[in-house]
Length: 163
Image (cartoon, rainbow, N blue to C red; front, side):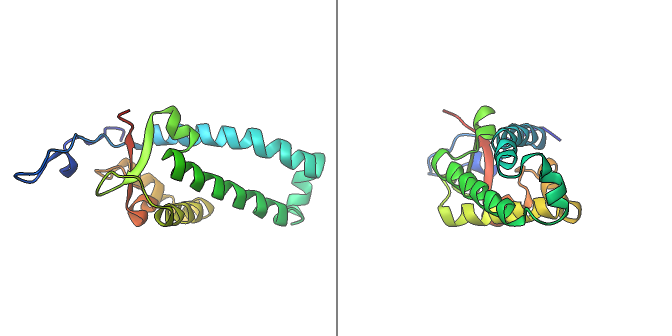
């Protein structure tokens, strides 16, 4: 599942065109590690914040539906932060830790804000509906360019950083 494809169309050039360097896509397991790093960072931020707001009663209040507004605001802030990370560093902290970045699937150039928003919204929906749409994330493991459904819809790929 983890092997990355280097013999991609990106590696070949049209006759007379300048050859583009080979690209190494980041596979499922490495992306899972990056996601776990991001999750740990979020837990270090969100858990104390929720504790400050609700104290030890958070889980009881959650079950009663009394945390929804604050939880949605926190999730929206996280979504915006992720998009800003993608936009300005081309990665989340987890992807940076494994020397990876998000780029345009066709040109390997940085991705515009609009497509990053699409990527984030699709990913958020897939995570919220993990059971039926988990295949969209697992697809990374079998796709030749290691794209999940959120990558395909936003026309992005995750590649190892060559810097």
